[in-house]
Length: 70
Image (cartoon, helix red, strand yellow):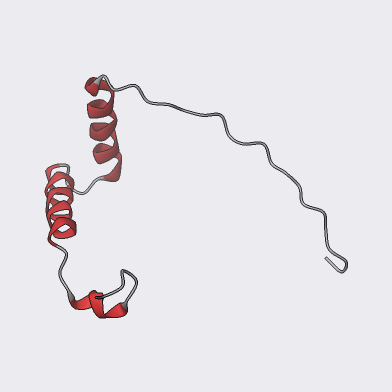
């Protein structure tokens, strides 16, 4: 059995990843590889989906005590 992190897997093509890359390239090409247009389209699709998204507030910054010499 090959372990998931075994480097021997690097040469094995992953069909799912390749399919996703094909779709992403086609989507990017449809917008001339313009990042702003791609993001605008994705946000428009996101808003139109009707799915509820959760936006959590940022976690407060916790300062760690400084070690001697820092």
